[in-house]
Length: 154
Image (cartoon, rainbow, N blue to C red; front, top):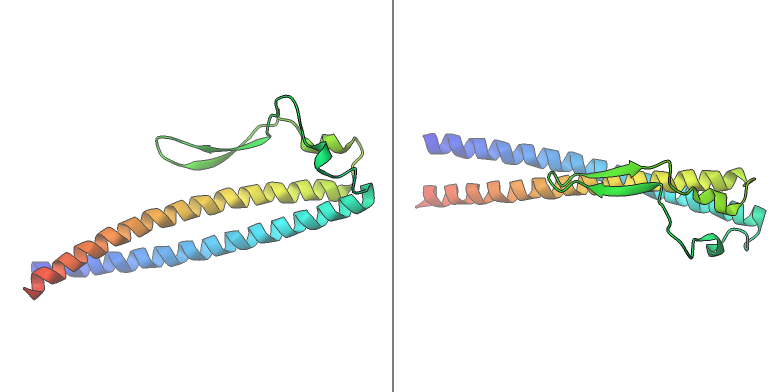
């Protein structure tokens, strides 16, 4: 009788893990949808900027070619907990200044859109890591459940 109760508890845990996985998949899909939206908006605003300023003024010629470049945002993974975070540093180089002092609003909107893309990407990576962790838990519980059924069938 105790074995059946344990099997029932394992089944309940498996059901709970499946529900968590479905919820995480929904969050992941919505996060990827936001990423696509931000990326599309950023590209459209960048195209508008190229149209307004000229294709030579908004191109890869403004990328840094020499000297150190300090990023304003970096992705940090903590070694102990393996947690991924986005770290912002306002002292870093502002890439929009490479295009001049008076830049069109569409270029600023493009920058904002691409910054949101970075945030959505980090969020998606966090969700995916949690999904992989839950999948490992599910596999171990499934193996435990299979062992229980083998003992009962003997």
